Length: 300
Image (tube, rainbow, N blue to C red):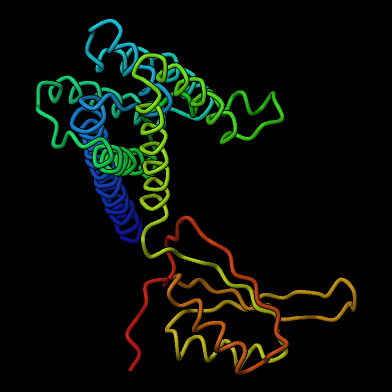
């Protein structure tokens, strides 16, 4: 009887795991689709009609499309194919499949949206809103495990062999792309392209990190109990006490660790200062928080 119950529980657990996996896959696919469509809107509705570029493969595709008359979608797809195989070898199967799906959707919708009239002919508005749409799309795709531009994958590979960061390598590529675009579209368009790229870059950060940015806090104090209880009572946040040792004094120390939002940082500092002015406090940005009891509960 016990064996039958154990087998039944195991089957139920497997079914629940399969359902959870299917939901995660559906959610990832949906957001990869939305992100790719948003990027296509930014490219075809704002940037291309006003001869504004982006960096990376998108920028190269826009320039080549202008020079050859071939639709951008074809360049976006075929220029990214080599990077799909690089991503598969270097990062993994899930990343590669997510990337190829996102790029395929981007290429298809870029082609479908090409005949649609631009929302604005004002170059400044096109640069700003095109950059926002582009950045939002790229940010969503990155957040859900894919990529829409192969130059980032190439930069990761080059970074392993050269003493430059991934960001520096990407900027180096984009410098040549914008210079090339300046000869094709004119230097004023190249400068607006830099503006669009900057807006997109900042939007990606907002989408990946979220508007309600999370921060980690590390506090070392002899009044750790009082501070921990005050954080729980006044902020509604959980805390963890860690054991530490001072390297200089050799004394045992208690370290408080907690995660807060950006808006709660000032309140946390006030709590620590009220209870121990000499406490050590370090606060750092966190890109993502999952699990635990991070969501704030109402305090009555």
